[in-house]
Structure formats: C-alpha cells, structure tokens
Length: 383
Ligand SMILES: *Cc1c(COP(=O)(O)O)cnc(C)c1O
Image (cartoon, rainbow, N blue to C red):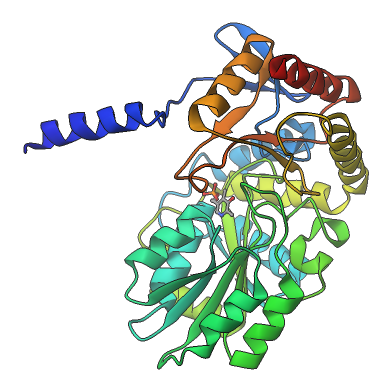
C-alpha cells in the first residue's frame, strides 16, 4: 500500500465512524460570543473561564511588551531567548504558587512531553489516571518507562497498581480538574499514596488554575496539598497561552539540562511573558470573576436539570452533557448552532467510546440571559 492509499483508507474510516474532525476559522469576541461565517453565536466551548482573553489591561501589557522587547525571543532560552521578562514571570509564578522554581514552556503539551521524556527511564513506571490528558499519555506511551492507568479518580485502583514491585522510580500523574469531565482529582488521597510509596505526584492543573483555590491558585491550593511537580497552562483561565512546570530547585536544574522542548525550541515571545504576568495579577485579584463564574455554573446546572441527557457531576466551569452516540452528539451540536449557540461535540478517542458529549464550558463573561438562552435551546433540541 502506498502512502497515498494509506491516507485515503484512514480518512474514509474516520468519516464512516462519525469521527471526522474539522477546524473552522472563527473570531472570538468579548462577552462570551464568537463570530463565524458572518454570523454571531453565544460561545460555550471556550476555556477562557474568566473572560480574560479580551481584558484591556492584558492587551495593553502585551502591546507595551512588544515596544520594549520586540516581536519574538529570537532564540532558545539556552542561547539568548531568556529575557528579564521571562525571568521575572518565572520568579512571580514560583512565589505565587509556593514552589522554589518555575520553568516556562511554549505550551502545556510541550511541558508535559518535556517532563515525561526528561524524567522517565526504562525501569521506571508511570501511574496515570485513566482520563489523563493526551499530551501526557502520548509521552508516556513513547517513553521507555512502563505506563499503567488507574481507574478514574480511584485511590483503590491506584493502591492495587502500587502493590506490584518496581525496580525504578514511580510517578503518579493526574489532572487537577479533568478537561473533558470537569470533576476533580482526590488530591489529598493521591498525596498520601505518593508519600507512602515514595513516589512523586505530578498534577496537571490546566483547568484549575485561575478557577479554584485561594486567589485562583488552583486545585492543589483548594485541596491544600503540594504536588512534587505542578504543571500550569496559560491558555485557559489565564486567557493567553504557554505553560510552566513548578518544581524544586534540583528538578528545575535537571529540566534545564535535559528538557529538549526547552533547549531546542524558541522561547515564548517576551511580550507574551509580560502579558501573562499582568493576567496572573488579574487572576489573583479576580475573586469577583470567580464568583460570577460560580453563579453561572449554579444557574446552568439548575436550568439543565430536566434535560433528557445526564449532566456530568461537575462543579467546575466544564459542564459535559453526556449524549453517548457519536452522531447524535454531533447532530445536537449542529442543531444548537442553527439556533445561534456554539458548543462542540467531543467524541472518542478524546473521550471513552460510547460517551460522546457536548462539552459545555461556562465563563465569568457570560450573562445570566445567555445561560438561559443556552438552556432554552437545549430543551428545544431535546423536543
Ligand atoms: C489544554 C491542556 C493541556 C495542553 O496545554 P496547551 O497549553 O493548550 O498545549 C495539557 N493538559 C491539560 C489537562 C489540558 O487541558
């Protein structure tokens, strides 16, 4: 079979399975709206949970950063791409989140890959939650270490895996708030298991930072534990993009020696680091935004309680409506789009087979009236 034949065959399979993926050019607007194909929609599939992506202070910080530092970093941080703006952001992050060090990455995907590839060796083992994000699982599959998955949020399942002896070291890996389900990991229990077994606990808090915990410090702050390694990303509630690994001093030095995603990749634009710094201060002082978000979550859950599909047990900004069938989920998303509501259907392999869903996300930027419209259109589509 030629390359061309292989592509055709795989594309056909994708289409027949109802898993065809597309990207449409859309224009995000402020106030929980989006424009696409000349039409405006209410936007319920963004991870911009606090509505910061259009915040004027962040935009002007980025502009000021551009004037001061230029458009790009010009090199890897190991050459000349690490500016005082990057250094300051790392320092701010470490202080704010309570770790000795922070190391910036261009994306959460890169941070997770760098973490696993630089740490895990052949005799080691990675024990990851069954629903752990693709960026980490992908790296774990490719690494020479052994990957085992424990049942979602199940401490007993993890205990069982830990009973098997291991010659190397163990990393226990979880998300703080799960990206496709919106529920939270039992971090205190995981911390205990890690301590008991002499493992390290890694928490990827992409969806917790900014949303929960004291001053929006995230899931670990909320559940009062400290992981050995914390991954945070700036593309969700922080409203920009980029990521950081928070860790001890030696681990940070180690990443600096070994993490190829760091060494062989251009550093984030310094202006972006300036913008993130400003966004983090808005996150820290954003209790009002978090309160609005919580009110929107409560409002939506109350309004959606009588829908024929189950709403996942989530207290976070991520409110999945579990449809089950791939085509049915896609059809529902399309029906909503007809009525001016933008929600994405999430299908396998992003979620387990048979659990296709509408991943509805709420934001502090949504108005009560917009949440009401969403619920109304869901009921209309159900009839
Ligand atoms: C979004 C996400 C990532 C990837 O972060 P990017 O900065 O978007 O690459 C990693 N982990 C989790 C849990 C995520 O939700």
